[in-house]
Amino acid sequence: MIEKAMRSGSRLERVLRAGLFAVTAELNPPDTADPQAVYDAALVLSEVADGINATDASGANCHMSSISICALLTRAGYEAVYQMSCRDRNRIALQGDLLGASALGVKNVLCLTGDDVTAGDQPEAKRVFDFDSMQLLRTATTMRDRAMFLSGRKLTVPPHLFLGAAENPSAPPLDWRPQRLAKKIEAGADFIQTQYIFDIAIFQKFMARVRDLGAHQRAYILAGVGPLRSPKAAEFMRAHVPGVHIPEAIIDRLHKTPKARWVEEGMTICVELIEQIRAIAGVAGVHVMAYRQEELVVEIIRRAKLFPRVPPEALTRSVPNDRA
Amino acid sequence: MLRFLQASPHFLEVIYNATHSLLKPFRRLLKPNSLTERVFVQGEIITKGAIFNCQMCGQCVLHSTGMTCPMNCPKNLRNGPCGGVRANGNCEVIPTMRCVWVEAYERSQQMPLYGQEMLNVLPPLNRQLQNTSAWINDFAQPEKFQPVGWAESPSPAGRGDRGEGERHD
Image (tube, rainbow over all chains, first blue to last red):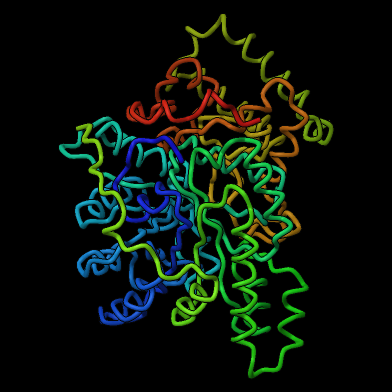
């Protein structure tokens, strides 16, 4: 579908290139030094996901670091999507981690600006933001395609990475969001994972503009979804998680549901959203973010009829062009 | 007067052009680390400080950012808004402040000369230029505005895939 050179040959990339509707899922980083917590979550998610996103202290809350989660995931043979935020590290650390991640076997990287430190549990921290997400993307493409650091210094072997970026179709300025997505593709994004989509009307309008720009033909767009656990959780997310927009109708629907059926109703809403999203032209997959409810992801993907996933061995294997 | 300037992005881009043309013949005199620079720094603090709340990054990109200083963004974003902008268009970090980029986008719509430059991917900041004169740097050492490895077309191997020169506008 998209005529680009194979970037990393990751499972996620191969699924997308084969034109299959991809599923990625977020792994919530544990607050423990025990690797088993990561393995337990990955075991559940790997059944239904073509890639497992390791979040980088999302919401600026301190957890096990994303690079170490990726190290555990690749060690156990899982497909990791390494989330890298510009909030906590400067360009020296970021470029070093891109190399290191590739050495660990990571093949997908999601480049993010990052939620501000004030959103998290340690708002008194120093924010870094030496780069923004677009500068990180272009730096990663420089390393991959030109085999050099941003300083111009040569790399012996470049990192082969399938590069992603985020977009939030529901945040102002709404008119400019599709162009910002195109700008991220210009900066080097091969795939996009969006923030939670709860408002289909806004997303449809966004995608119509994205198609006008032809951006869906230059990168694979995965729409973010997730189950809401309770009306209170939905209200909390809307008020406290940066950039999450939940329409009143969905919160009302949960309020009218008896407490015992909240989780069930949350999943139903999520499945309905996935079905509506699949019907939109130009969407290449979904990204499921189920905060502390990984066990629900399998059920959601089953009900959305996206299960079973294509086994990795059924996908064409291709070695990335070595341009070193 | 100040309010008038702040509300007139088109007028500001015209002033930018005029200043550029005015200084160009004297570019040989505009040297970094000189007495001239100290004068320029003071001048920029007074003028750009008053109009844009300039933070003296020393690599001014106002014409590419809707005549709105991106250094007022708490995350110092140079390439557009983050995903955390509130529904009312205010900043994720400072809830009482309008998002710098929401403002920049609106203002760029009134800028026929440079409005389109919002779509350019701008290089990371050179932190060594903090508190120096952007005008002098622009004429005397523009190479310091982007790292050696920063390419306008990042992936020679991947460039052919961008469609038929499709621009996003």
